[in-house]
View 1 (cartoon, rainbow, N blue to C red):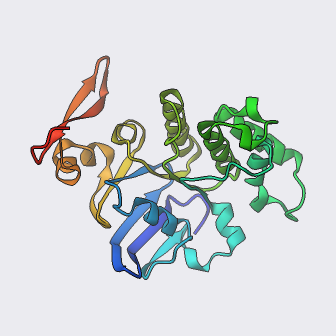
View 2 (spheres, one colour):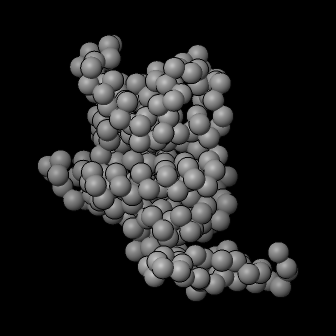
Amino acid sequence: MPLDARVMLTLREIRFGFPARRDFLGPISLSVDAGQCWAIVGPNGAGKSTLLRLMAGLHRPHAGEIEVLGALLRGLSARRRSQLLSFLPQRTPVDADFTARDVVLLGRYPHRSLGLFDSAEDYRVAERAMALTETLPYADRRIATLSGGEAQRVHLAAALAQEPRILLLDEPTASLDLQHQLAIFRILRERACGDGLAVVVVTHDVNLAARFCTHVLLLNDGRPVAQGPSATVLTPSVLQPIYGVKLVTLTVPDHPDHYWIVPLEATNGDRE
């Protein structure tokens, strides 16, 4: 399949589990196209991070197949997989003796011809990624001296510098303030729509998902509850039974296409 193919990531009847819960996750089928930004949402323990790690090839499904640009993920070499997929985990190392620029340049490793030296192109791509994530001011600082949010943005810059076709992120805004939460999701949407990447992001923030993501997969207890365009999944009628909270939507003045999902009270009668 050519590199400009629309279907970037395909999951076919994926099932996965752990020794204590063999059939915890699945079956899940999903197709992510170039230009789409998918959010995976759901309560704690729904299987969101586990599913993302399956997509990244860090777990192997017990059943079903995952394809990347038409090729079986399990058949790709580690180098080829790193050229096509970039994965940003929920927790990233912050105590390594590297500068922020060093960390971002590590993202170029899969593209080096001999895997040894940074080229002028590597520095150009790394600087662009740091500019996008507003981390250039930290370029020469040790990663261990940065705040959690600053370090998270540096690692996002490294993921972008990897120049993947598919970008997988696990709660990338968990340590960020409101300004940078919006900035990061705006970058993800722009990389999908502008650069033709396929983006999949795990998030607990349904409002950020509604605002910036084109599609949503809703999980609960390892099972897909709903999937499709954000406006059809992120509604009170779909979310309330899963989260156990009464919800309403509020439109944003002067922005009729934007809305906020607001919790009112627990549906079991217990006040929040």
